[in-house]
Image 1 (cartoon, rainbow, N blue to C red):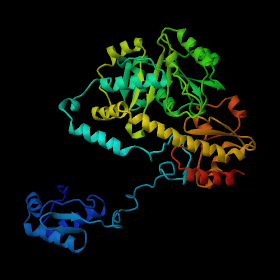
Image 2: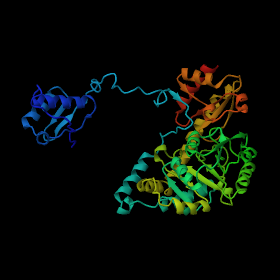
Image 3: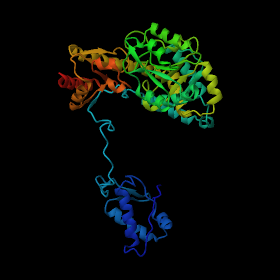
Image 4: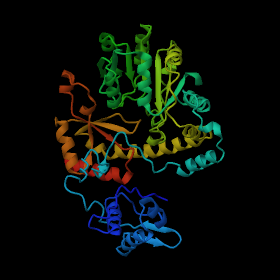
Amino acid sequence: MKELPIRIRLEKKSGKTLYEQLYEYIREEIRTGGLLPGERLPSARFLSDSLQVSRTTVDMAYGQLVAEGYLTAKPKSGYFVNATEGLYNTGMTAMEEKPKASAKETEDAFRYDFSPTAIDMTYFPYATWKKITRNILVDAKSRMFALGEPQGDRELRHTICRYLHSSRGVNCDPEQLIIGAGNDFLLLLLEKLLGRHVPVAMENPTYQKAYRIFNSFAYPIFLVPMDEKGIRVDRLRESGAQVAYVMPSRQYPTGISMPIGRRMELLSWAAEGKERYLIEDDYDSEFRYKGRPLPSLQASDSQGHVIYLGTFSKAIAPAIRVSYMVLPYPLLEKYRRECGFISSTVSRIDQTILNEFIRDGYFERYLNKMRKVYRAKHDLLLGEIREWEADFAVSGENAGLHILLKDRRGRDEESLVKAAEEADVKVYGMSAFRMTADAQTAIEPATLILGYGSLSEAEIREGLKRLKKAWH
C-alpha cells in the first residue's frame, strides 16, 4: 500500500471544510503526477488517524474523488487512482512546464538513424536470460549477496579468460583480469595505476569518450596522425608519450585493421621504455565478415606492455555494463598494493548470470546468429550503394557495424549531413571524431559514417533511398 505523502496541514479556520482541503490536495497530486494510475491510496481509517481528522472527513473526500472519476473504489481492496489522460500537468504554469527535449536528446529525432554505435536487440535471447536469472535467484545462497572479490568473481574471470584465449588469442590468468561496470570505470582505475599527468598518445580521429576521460585526468594528450596501416609510430616516438591508446583490430571510427608489421613496431616502441604501455581497446572484434578474426595485440606481447580492454556491450547488450581489463603482471602488483581495496562495481548476481550465459554455450550461439544478421545487413548496404561509386568511395567494410563514405565530388561534410537531416535521415561526419584539425585534414574529402547495426533491412533500403535523393 502506498502511504499518501500528505504535506498539508488541514486548517479548521481556512474558510474551507476539512474534507474540501483534503479533496483538493489529493486531486492536485493526481493531476500533477504525484500519484500515478493504479496506485492504491491509504485506507480511510489509516488516513484519518495520520491526519487526526474524523473518518467521515476522509470518506467524504474519497467519495467526491470517486464521483469525479479520479479514484475507483474496489470492495475489500481500497481506493485506486484512475488513468486521467489529459489532466496531468494541466495546473502547471509556463514557468513550471518541463523543457522540450532537443533533437539530440530525443532517440527518435530522425526516422532513419545510421548510428555507428547502436546494435540490434531483436534477436536477444530474453527467454534464456530470464531462465538463467530465475534459476540463480531460486538457488541463491547468502554468499551471492556478500560483497565478493574486488576484481570480480573468480568463476567469471576464469570463464572470460578461456573465451579470450580461444577467440582472441589473449594470454592471461584469472588473477590478471579485472571486471568493471563499463570501460569508463576501468579507465578511471587505470589512472590510479599509471599515475597523474602521464603523457598519453591517441590516434586522430579517435573514440571521443576515451579522449574526454583522459582529458579529465589532466593527462597531456598527444594526437598522433594515422596512415592506411593505423597510428604512425614515427610520430608516436616524436610525441614523447609514455602510454598509447590504440584499437588495432578495428580502429574506431576509421575501420582500419592494423597489419602485423605495424603491430610489431608498436610493441617495439613500448619495449623501449620500462614503464611504457599500450592500451588495446578491443571493442567489437567479434564481428568480422571476411576471413578469420584478427588476433589481439596482447597475443603478441611477450614483455608485458599491453593493457587489454574488452566489453560485452556490443556483443550482448549495452545495459549489461560488464567490461574487463587484463593487466600485465607489473601493473597487477601495483593494483594489489594500491587499488585492491576498491570493491567490484558489478553485481554478483549479474556476474553469475553472465558466467552461465557464456559457460553453457548460449553466448557463442547468440554471437553466431548475430554475425549472420549483421553480415546480411552489411551486404545489403554495400549492394545498395554500389551504384554510388561515382560519388563516394567506400571503406571500413567487412567488419564491425559501420562503413565510411568518402565524397568524390568536393562537397563539404556539413552540407551532406544537413541534406540528409532534411530527408529525416541521420548520418555522422568524421569531423566529430577528430579532436584537432591539421593541414592534412583540410585537404581530405568529406567523410561520412553509416552504421547499420540497429536498422532493419527495410529501414536500410528506405534510408538509403532518401540519402540518394538528397545527395544526387
